[in-house]
Image (cartoon, rainbow, N blue to C red):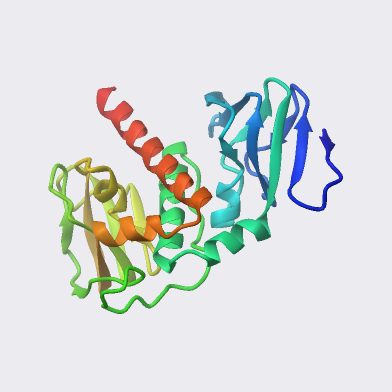
Amino acid sequence: MTQSASSGPKRTTIEPGIVMMRQGERGDRAWLIESGELEVLLTAADGGIRRLGVVGKGAVVGEMALIDDGERSATVRALTEVACVEVTRDAFRSLLKRSPPLASYLLQSLIAAIRRDYGLPPTERVGNAVDFRSTNSFQKVVDRRMIREGHVFFSPNDPVNAAYLIQSGRVALRPGRGTLGEEIASFGPGSLFGEIYLLTGRPPDVTAVAVSGGICEVIDKRSFEEAVMAMPPILKSLARIYIAQLTKAKAGRSEG
């Protein structure tokens, strides 16, 4: 691996076969790929290794662990010589600070959904829960509601017209239309849910039910779209990539 001596962004050349990051490690940098190809590998709980795909020019790798402060979600290895630009954790955090609070919630929520799809443990949200007060500002939320235990937010194939940010209480996702049974995922204060269905237009395939009473902020599609548009370009692109990835994953499961 070689680096330029420039005081600006570090341009790096990576030789074929070099592992840029390993699943489960802590991350301190990401890479913007300028040329070359890399393979993305996922190690399952049983030790089996699955290739998630091959990425190349224009891709960003390693950024998820910088955004949500979690572990590396996959192993990335160079297939050819790769030219890339290193982006530090501080640089990514600076980009997030320049975005609306809702944008940070959205990115971390999308990454959490991708980690669930990979079968990886959840990561606690970075920072404190934001107190979104009802206002017309795109950084805020339209409505705040008290939710009782047992309240169903949506069920399979229901139209989803809003997403929800939990201020207090807990919400579970359960398979099928019933409110009982095994939990697929559980969300507490500071968590966002429903945004994937809202932004992709795909109907839900689970039931979201309050397992304890609390308060939720209700966020409409326009608020999300305006928050995404206010992101710096690289974060805006990442949000769209994550949404496309989750949409493709859900489509693959339904076809299977």
